[in-house]
Image 1 (spheres, helix red, strand yellow):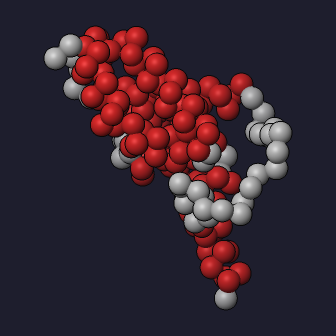
Image 2 (cartoon, one colour):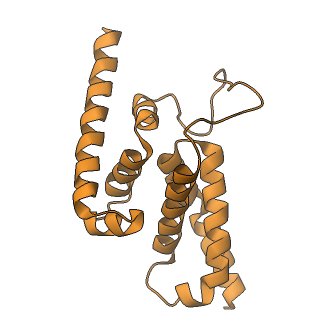
Image 3 (cartoon, one colour):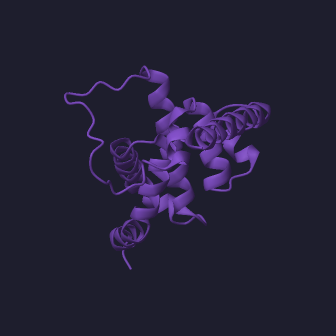
Length: 161
């Protein structure tokens, strides 16, 4: 099978999973689509080299995470839009879940650590290498992020009673 066919087969088979990963990482379906598109474009340029390794999906996830981190380092946290958000209809992603809301309120680095640790199951050393921080920073960000998630989710449950 030619490189191009192998790449297309990889994209067809893993695009949905990568989009879900991007959404959990960024908290926004549009940012997730942008992350996937940019990461796959970069993968295409390196496909001959990357396919010889064990896991091209890991390469794409690492690229997506680095792109996400770079984006939030370069821009402010506000998201300017031409129109106010529409919260009326259901979306492809479950943006209304308590966990999604709580994740969206976490600082970006804490969210990235939580997603990489618990969604993808990466060990602390790989998370540290991906984010360009120390393993101690990964552990402290995970601790703070989990504490904040627990507090917010507990507060939501208490408010509903």
